[in-house]
Structure formats: C-alpha cells, structure tokens
Length: 609
Image 1: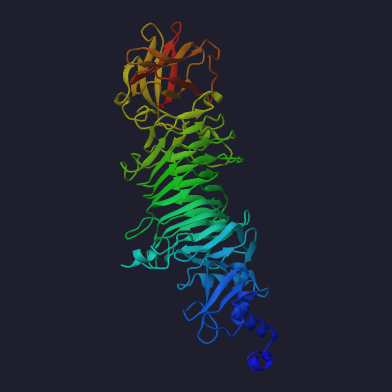
Image 2: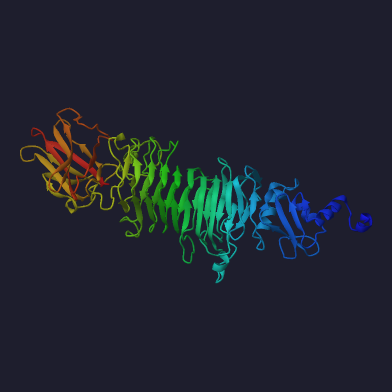
C-alpha cells in the first residue's frame, strides 16, 4: 500500500493544493478565475489548465502572464472575459486585464464577451484593439457604457501594430481582419465628449507623425451612441470595411488631405444606419458625417436626420442609399452637400423620403464644379435613377420669406439640389407622389444637359441663351429677394399683342418634363394671358399652361396659384413624345382686348428626367 501522507509530505501545503496535484495527475486542472491561476505558484511546464471557459497551457514561451519558475501562461483558443471576473476587480479592471493579454504581440487569441451584459467603465478606461490581434467578439450584443467622458479622448481605438516601413505589408497580411464585432459603445441620450470608436492612430487628424498601418480588417455589428465623434478615422487607415455599423448622435470625422497622407483607399460602409444628429459637447454644433478626403464606397446604408458633408477631395460612391427625416420637425433640414473644391459624390438609385413637414432649406446641395468654385471643372454630384417624393411642404423657394428667426440654407429655388454646382443625372427618375402637389420638384436648376441656360435671367445679355425674342421684352433690375434680374414683358394695343422668348432644350423620347415658371403681374385692372408653351422642334405642341386674368378679377385657371408676395407659379409636368430629341420652351404674354398688360418673369426651372 502507498502511503500518500509520506509521498506528499513537504509538497502539499493546503487542501486546495492537494486537489490541484491530484487533478494534474489526470490532466484535469481547473481554476475558477484567471487570477486564481496567476496566484498559484506551483505550475509545471506543460500543465493544461482551465478557468471557466478559457483553456490555458503553462509554457516556457513568453506571454504577458508570468507564473512561477520562469514559466508563462498561454491561452489555447478563445479567451473569455468573464473568466477574469473574480468579484474583487471592477469591470474596468478585469476587462483591461483580459485585453492586456489578448492585445500583446505574443498573443493572437480572440477576446470573447457574453451577450446581453452591460459594462460600466470609468473615465480612466479606454481600450486599444490591434488589427493584428484576435480582436473582440460577442455572438449577440454586449453593451459598453462610460459613466463620463474617457480621459484618453476615446472609448475604443482600432489600430495597427506596425508603423510605416519596408516590412509593413507582409506584417499586416498576418492579421485575422476582425478586430471588433457585436458591441454597443455608449448610451443614447447621454452625450459625452471625445470619440466613441476611433479607427487608426497618429499624432492628429492632420499629421502622419506616429501613424500606424491600419488596414485590411472588418468591423461588424457595432453601434456607437452619443459621443461628440461617434466614429473618427485617422491617417494610416485604408482597405477596410464597416459592416452593420450603426451610429446615433455625434459626428463622423476623417482627415483633410495634406502632403504625404496615406489614407482612404477603398473604405467600405455596408448596411450601416447613421441617424439623429445631436448637439456636441465640445462646440454645441449638430453632428455631421464629414468625408474630407479618401475614397468611400457605401452600400445600402441609411442616413436619417443626419447631414453628410463631402469636402476637400473626398470621393463618395453610394449604392442604394436611403435619406429620410423621420419624426423630425426641423425646418432647416439638409441631407447631403458636396462642397469641397475637388469633392465628388455618386448616388446610385437613392431612395429619398421627404416627410410632410415644412422644410425651407434645400435637402441636397452641391457647390463642387460651379463657376464660382476655385476649381470649376472638378467634382460634382451624380444621381443615377433616383427615387424621391414631391412633398407639398418642401418649399426652399420660400426660405427668404420666413420670419421665424431660423437661418435657412436655400438659394431661393424650388429644387432638390441647390448650390449651383455641377449636378448630373443618369437614367430616369421616379418621382413618387408626383401629383401629391401642384408643382413637381425639379432635381436641379442647372442639371447638366437637362436644364435651361440662364434660367434666372442673371446674364447681362438676355439673347446669349434666349432667342426668338419678340415684342417688348427687356431685362430689369430686380428687388426680388432671390434674383438680381427679371424679364419684363409689356403688351397692349394693336402693335403689341404679345411678347415672348424661347430656348431649345435637348431631350429623349418618353422623358418626364418637370419644373415651373415664376412670374408676377404688374397690371391691376387689365386683362391678359401668361403662358408657358413647350413644343417639339416640328411644332407639335405637347404642353401648354395658360394663365387668364380678366379685368378686376384674379386669375381663372385650371391650376391654383402658389403665391409668395404676389409671385405666381406655372407648374410643368408632362412627357416627351416618342422619338423626339429637341424641345422649344416659350415664355409668352398676350393682351386681351388690346389692354395694356405687364408681366415680369423671375425664373423658369425645367428638367428633363
């Protein structure tokens, strides 16, 4: 018989140690927490241990966790963060301990969080997650909350381990590409200063000093709530994807271009939801999505109550995006603007939902490519087969007439895109609820190859773009709040029965013709006709609206007037006959019974869609 007491004499100091010694003999050494393993001082090389769900091996190979006699603790497979929760450490402390191990250069283990657990972190807590590590993972959703703004300036940072050098490409290729999946960062309606999700690292957004290569990775199923900057990209970030990343509250930030920057190659956003701009702590400004440089490819994402700003030389290509202002009563709403000198944006099959609430700012804006731009031949905004609705309360043309103390962003025209920049349309356009209002909303007053030239008569010479000028027609200075010039047409008597101007517009068969003419009658007690006539070049009339004013009475017309300080609209909605390629647009005023009749035209906005 073996005498266990004699065999184990001077080797066992406690019952727990006896249990561990016996279990080791069967390869079944269990500890309740990771701290228990670290506190145990009689490990042997090759021991296989468990702490909760995490498996470990004692090894001579270095790791962040040193045990006894020059040995180290190395994880086998996934590391489970709750195995570090020993009841004594705070959540900040034990998550940091787990992250310290998984982010070490000698570790490639994934750090796994339980679903439906809420972590409350102090302001002293921030986390760095390396692209080349195993990353953080939750199969459901794990919530990461901060009690106050993180002192480091960010909550979670995704960054590369390697600085720029001749070996960086091969080193980065060893990444497992999934640094973060399955987390909510921050709390909705609890606005905090700083960055929620910081991607990349350098000295600042305007410097490559200290930059590291942060590329070839995917962040998935992550939501960020109410940090001043919900997402910030730093120099050194490229070739990555954000998939199902949802943000609410603050801004998205990117660097501006500077000499020597390496940033922005093929950054993808897939099925993301970006919504509800809140006022930032730092400057009390509403959050925006700022694309200042780089190439962003966006698939099937939603932008609700959020302004997208494309600045600098950024290139943004969106496939099937959704823009909407749900539940918002803000009257100065803006969905997207292209303002950089070289900024370029493509909206491929966008769905634009305009809720029926008063809006006096143009929802889209493009300054890039305009004649007033520093680089008038660069950039622009492209629509490919857009779908949008003609909401009756969308009236950017009435912005100047509002007296409510709100600053509106409008050029004074009824259009989807303001700014006067280069706006293109490819394919057709689906105008949902087209007859929901009396005036179909044009896309842009200067839609390339699909709109009239000198639409507002502001060129010094009317005949530069308008022709067939007949009767008494002249340019006058305007006191209107929108345009500097107006066209005065004056008729009456035998020799002045009518006055008109016309212009040709290219088209294609079956295209929609949408827009409006805006005019004002200066004669109070006379009769006359105000007409917009659209014909094909072979004089086949396809559209005519006649405004008939009899002596002493208001207009008798099929369409009711849409008035603003005695200005009236002639709504235009029609289609081009099959096979036609050129239209003639005529503005005409006629006398009735020889009465003297004066009319001024402020603008004629027409698009062929």
